[in-house]
View 1 (cartoon, rainbow, N blue to C red):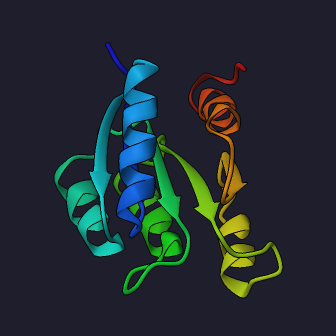
View 2 (tube, one colour):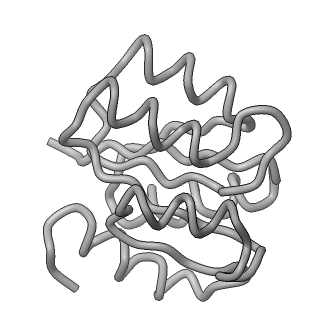
View 3 (cartoon, rainbow, N blue to C red):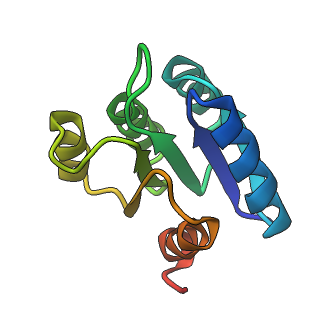
Length: 124
């Protein structure tokens, strides 16, 4: 059975690029263009193995998505991606929630894949 990932980012190009790349790597991918939409998906389906969420989005943030993910399924891993620095208050708040990994945009797809593998099964 394919591992299921929910990608959350308000940048459509990033969503499409990551979706295509991770599908080619054999993952089942769902996308969400907003934190609000991601939270609705999580409320309907808590069977994701991993949620990869942008940190700063309009409305609900990546921190909100992270909290809802853990509320719906404590076993789901969460990875944070962001275009903002490690010194931002929102990034520090996200790190306190202990994500399985994080990446700063722009990142090489291979680097993201390595982090996805670590989040899902601890291997590179």
